[in-house]
Amino acid sequence: MRDYSRLATTAFARRHAAITALVVGAGALGNEVIKNLALIGVGGLWISDRDHVEASNLTRSILFCTRDIDEEIARGTPKAVFAARRVREINPDVAVSAYVGEIADLGYGVIRRADLVFSCLDNEMARLELGWACSRLQKTLVDGGLGLMNYSSGQVTVFPKQGGPCYACRKGAERRRQLLQDLQGREDPCWRKEEGAEGGEAIATTPLMASVVAAFQVELGLRALQSHDTDEAGRSYRVTLHPTPSLEQGTFERSPACPLHDPMSVVTEVRECAAARSDRWTPLDLLREAGQPDGCVALDWPVTAKARCRSCGHEWEPLLRRARFRRQRCPACRGTDLVETEVVAFVRADSPWAGRTLAALGFPGAHVYEIAGGSDARIHVEVTGDLDASEAAGRP
Image (tube, rainbow, N blue to C red):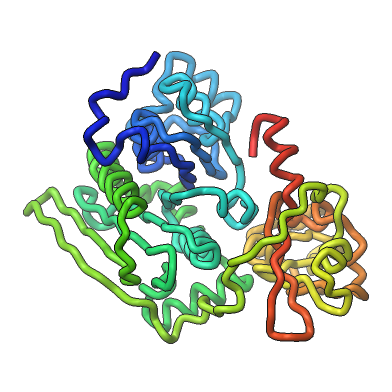
């Protein structure tokens, strides 16, 4: 039996640690955050990552340093799955689940059940998507990042759960505009950065700085959750260890020019549909459940429904988020000269897509859908049955 007595008089005592945390990103930084949460013994832990374990992770990711790691790498084991397995070994008291995929494909039903969200991501696009989700669901988000120019520096930012700024608020008007355009479908600049890194221009990160930043994230996150402070300001902490050790603190407010704070899109009340499953329900079912047969299902991000390859003429239905589609190749000739012939931002009852299942349309499982009716009010419907199905399968 695990003895938590040394934590009893701290901010990490059992009564404070009985939370569910979501960690997005299981790389160097995510490894350390996950390890800390496992040792503290949080009640529940969700781990989300799209990538697989690689040899280059081993100098910075303690959870992946096992005797059989070569076999795991050869097998292509997902980081999230491997990290979840290691959490069970470290502390069986923690109920842990893994999700393999991009953050925009993680249903809001999962995120809204987390008490605290940790961002351990390395690109702006994913940070923006996660930040917007947490802002809509009113979840405290603790973002961590390792310095690009100085590998002995890092930053932690705490975004309050209600009334505060989001990740986009911290950007200048032009950069925010570029990011939002990218989310509407243009290529993510961070992917170009990552492709350059794969070509030999790798960004230096160390396990030392990852440990420091992750410690800040968990400490500040748990304290923010316990605080009764209603301050709506965001807070940032920049730590530098070399050449001159320093800690810089700052606050920031919600930007009035940020378009991601439509009060009507804030998810305050949710209709949980336990019988609903993405492989059975359609947009028509969502409209009926919301009592809005003449309304529409508003998608979080535009979806490329139909596309054509200019090189070979092949036509198909990608049914992918527009931003994700722009990274695809033609399934017939592998060409990249693609054109979208239909993009969907909402689905009405008379849409040709309304009768297809949510899963067939490529929508996230366990998602909370926004239904817009004739009035300004929005109704939010959750496909709750996906959560029950995933728990039965032992995964989110």
